[in-house]
Length: 241
Image 1 (cartoon, rainbow, N blue to C red):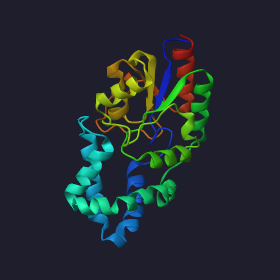
Image 2 (cartoon, helix red, strand yellow):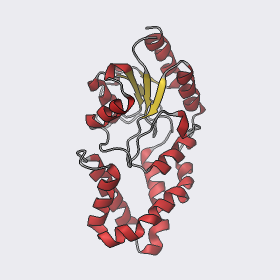
Image 3 (cartoon, rainbow, N blue to C red):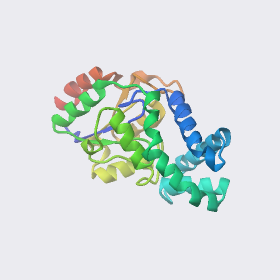
Image 4 (cartoon, rainbow, N blue to C red):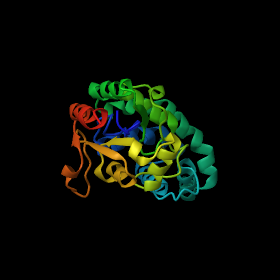
């Protein structure tokens, strides 16, 4: 085995097949119906959530993403409402969020290949964009046919101070793993958010099943394909090294 010690996986659109617009649209409607009795309407709530997501994406590391989101939410709805209604949102992620599974696909090859990679002796972690609470991340991991404890760690809005595509997000992941870039392979479906890991010396593999390529970059610069191609790539380029 060569230098690679850990394989990092993205979740949404990588291990968990989904159309992001369909998923967020469906999930926000579930959240809005939960929040409606407290006076929230769909349009303004969705706008506020996206505003909070942008606050997390712009986080410069000064606080956890969780605090960036809720501080932003309080700036829109007021501190009292944010404090008062936060348990409602926590309850949503514990309960109703499970119904958002219907807005995702399922590919048994995802869990199969993660376990195969682990069985080859590699450490595995989940480098999913930390925009969700831990409980929602754990739920989505299970939708993909895996268990949270199969990963050494996974990034959530509670334990992260940065988001993709900020390279500081990946630097923190490497720090957590105790590794340098050359010792990791990043597998993801988003050209803009996942392939940037290569800038820190990581090897990358672009999973094309639900690919996002907003800037229409030439993907031939990256090893790419589905889960079978990932396995072949691992065998030829990583394990055989």
